Image (cartoon, rainbow, N blue to C red; front, side, top):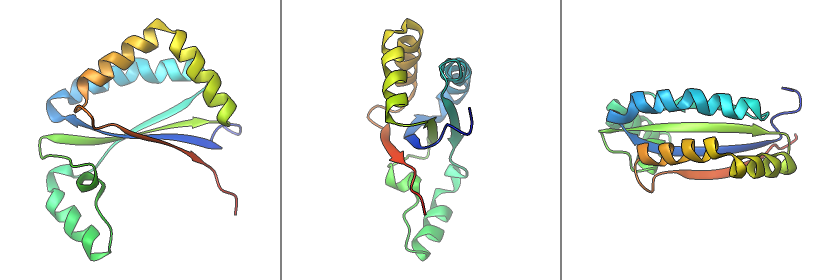
Length: 132
């Protein structure tokens, strides 16, 4: 299946209070299983060094970049997380979305997720693979 996955990537970035870190880790396990069972590769990452935000910003600004923690307005008591979901194509994404909307477990996991992140912090986008 790995050869078929990855033409379309759905990206999420969110902030979560540091106090919710362990609860997010626990929530991630059933979510990864749920996505895996319906044929979606899901990877979640935490931004490194958010406690050293000023050092990251200084390095980014020297290069003409904006550190992502600054771009998503992360506070010192928040972590920045990134999620990637890999799909074959738009139809695969649509099929998975339809299945998820009918799945009560998926709805419950989504509610729990929204209760753990900083309100209004989740940004999302779909990216199509480019061929060079």
